[in-house]
Amino acid sequence: MQQEKNEVLIYAPALCPMALTLDVIGGKWKPLVVYLVSQGVNRFSTLEKQLPGISRKMLANQLRELESDGLLSREIFAEVPPRVEYSLTEKGASLMEVLMPVYEWGARNLQHRMRHLH
Image (cartoon, rainbow, N blue to C red; front, top):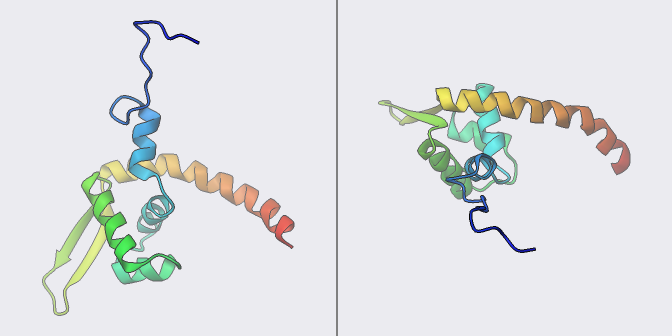
């Protein structure tokens, strides 16, 4: 099928809202990190414990990317040893409006999946 000259294929994250969203929260860990921070899990070590299977390097990278994308803020406390806490920004909180229906869908379908595993 030939494309019209004035028709534009939109898949670039800068141009397509869906692609942008998936670029920002895509992957295995980012939605889980955002969800956990929204639930008050806000320190690196606590997040690491709540996410079995994530490496320290991967968690640090995901936190850095979420902060860079404006979804998380990081506060460093002048203590010994140093303490760092993460929190959702206003933009991150607005993402929860999207993630909570995903969570609810998962909760509704979890029982179905569990029945098929046994």
